[in-house]
Length: 99
Image 1 (cartoon, rainbow, N blue to C red):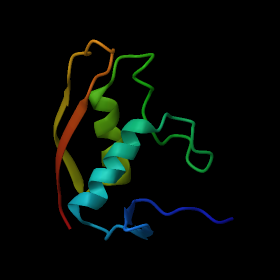
Image 2 (tube, rainbow, N blue to C red):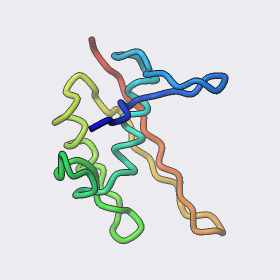
Image 3 (cartoon, helix red, strand yellow):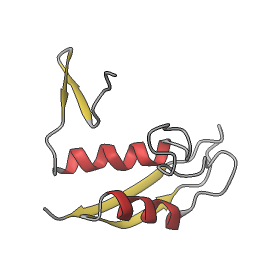
């Protein structure tokens, strides 16, 4: 089965994999972890976090997920903004990584 390898980038109409162990690489991994709900990926049903639309976002759940799959990444800050007039919130995550 063909699959798309994440993380990827689009540059001038071309797709390519991001260089492993770089900040952009881990930034995309963390962003995907925040967007994928547990049970959504058939190959790894434990990957992801609960959908914050229906339950309160859990810092601990995200920290646990990242520590399990990418132990070289340490989340240093997780901040969620208050909902704006449209009901949108922003999740801001900062991290350090070791190679």
